[in-house]
Length: 468
Image (cartoon, rainbow, N blue to C red):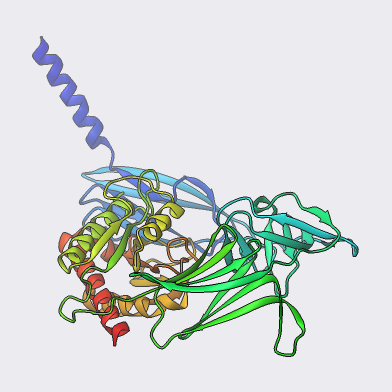
């Protein structure tokens, strides 16, 4: 009796598993979505050996099971039909994609700029770490600097949720970063009391003794760095009072990591030092290098057509890179060694706290709708600060050549992991998760090892070039 029951269950399971061909769509993530782009790409997988169609067009199955296909979109409702045929069985899925027409005219609301009264000064302080100063009253505007706690600011007026800082230049701060402004009769300029120069094994320091913390900016130009302190009354060459102080650091060697931070009211500028002796045979010996495996935990990153997650590929490449760097004598710091979620600024802090000279964040790419994964693919490197541009270029060229991948260029991009001036910070998009050929390669262990070797060799080349 029990034997008959078991055989019957097996029979029904076989019917369930073979009655329909499988269609597993990874992107789009829902069968009804609004996409305001000229096209949408479908990624996913079906049963091996199936015949697969999208809107009756035959679609190639990579690795005999997964698909990546671009579908043009008309304005309005688009019904997209997916069909998979396998062993005489057929499975179908329908997707409804809405593409809206662009709104006519300028629909953006211009926010009024409200100035302060002429007889008052609006005083405030920053209330959080990484209080971002921007060039315009917008979250998409260029970052000028991220300030620490308790920096004294004076405000001119308000536009929406942003306040304009009363200094020469365009400086805006979001209201969430500051105390509620209070009215005062006049400003209290900071006093610059003295400067002090000192060094240790890792850094050269310049300490500016101030009466209270003020807004500052740093600008690199070749082998020079210009530090400007705002809200500090000083005299120009003709004896006239000016509300800012500028100090120019000139160096006869390439600039590595540098940054500023406050110690109570004193601002400390520090510049990372390259070791005095670099072994040409082992140029990374004892150098501190931070390796970040992008994403982790519930942050999957890009998802490939057969549902391999970017976070796992990133971790694999990072593990190989860590080993190759250690074999080359480097002192390696990591953000994660397992499937953990680490906050973006926590990753940056780990690199800083461990005095890393170089930071490399490992990622693999995806695309927005409207782009074609068969056209936009390859390897690319992102930097933000001038001191990281050379390393970005070396890694980009080497990866493209070593892996025989399309060179998708070097890009100046504002990401948390490459925004820091200290350490020298780059973010590497090794390849594209949604390009079929590159996706297959990214699941190959030798290919991942070769990515890691190429990045390690690039860092060696960079250090030797900086030394010379």
